[in-house]
Length: 594
Image (cartoon, rainbow, N blue to C red; front, side, top):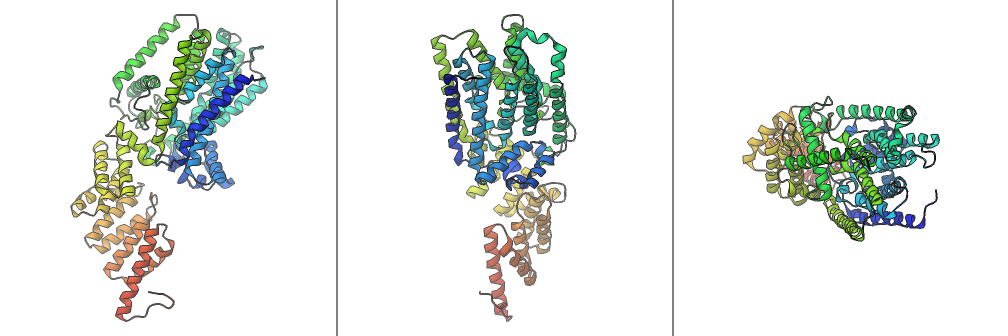
């Protein structure tokens, strides 16, 4: 197929603008929301390319509640080629997004009969540069969205019927099956490919899709079988996940609210998606909804949803242009369906900007169709270009909220001050980055006011209380984390044990403190290195008068501790022990300098 120079120039320009916009993310850092789970704390991925590593990500069906070996492979390739720099991970997302933008533009050109480069370019640009795309592109953990969409779009290009025969040639169909398979290995959402492929065929052929229906159905059978297998795998991954957030999920519907509430929440999500597509206000990550409670923004969401339904009903009564509208509506609803939570899973998180990455292409396709069927006047063209520039500026502005963990969740708190995840994350940063323990404690208390039973928040809170070192906090530390310390199945048992050990150490209960620090260091799912617990255990032995035991532990920590401050503190403690022994009479070991 020959591509005109004008069309090629527009495609290159779209890719160049996306690539240029992503340059600001080269200095961005990792975030603790899923970036650690998928990349820098994932042992198989962070080690880079290798058969054993790829075998691990390909055969581990439950890690993080999602099976995505192809996406993990791209992370591994980044690390092998460019090192562990988070900036590279960020920018590779933008490269994928640029490629997707080009594929979207060319698909629009093909489906609209190449009648208007302007229409296809504007529609593709409004999709690519809308700030709702930030979450999928500027967030490292959302790499799966841009990777699966790349192969998804390639599959759709192969599925577009031949303009002469009005059919999909067998070789192209076989390649489309392969593209879907690769897309499903990047993210299970690709299971919607059969429905979207039918929408593309419906858009291209209109009423002709009714002809030879049985033959067309047979052609879709391999796609449907792959979709069913992917759906089953997705259910298994989510209900057997090794991630703590999924520990309460043992069934598809368990823990996600009633079916009526999930439908209610889905309708609100669709309405708010549409509202923020037109006016991108208060965009952020982690929109929250508590099962069986009224979600935030319920009224405007329901009003917009009702308006959408009414518009579709009215449009259905009009024959002219009905096929294109309903084909695009099918694309939008089918692509969004797996993430709405109606059938269970994601019910408490049925709204996120990243879920719109693929569905909004269908909406943009209908815009391209309208601009072709009804050529716009000059003032409309100017308005559309202005809208692209506005959205592009807004996208560039919103990118900065993915700079680091503190900025990431600070944005959430600006819009939703009581968001418990944001409060607990920012609280951790106040303690670790700024040493402001009092502010950290207040933010943790604000988070616990929303979810008093969240084990991870409780564990981190008592750790900060113990670090703050106020005697009046001891009773609360004991009250909140004694049960956590005695439950071996919890990931945060180690943190809780260390906090309790710190309390006992300050109260000079050396034996009890040693027992708790030992339990903390041995916790099987400890989230951080046990160095701090081990050195405090050694200090307890020192204060108890067990110099031999203390020296043995300090000696190990002085060389093997991963935290530099712990190694230095261990060396200083050894010097103290040797000084005590020197004053008491015993000779300092040969070859050791004081």
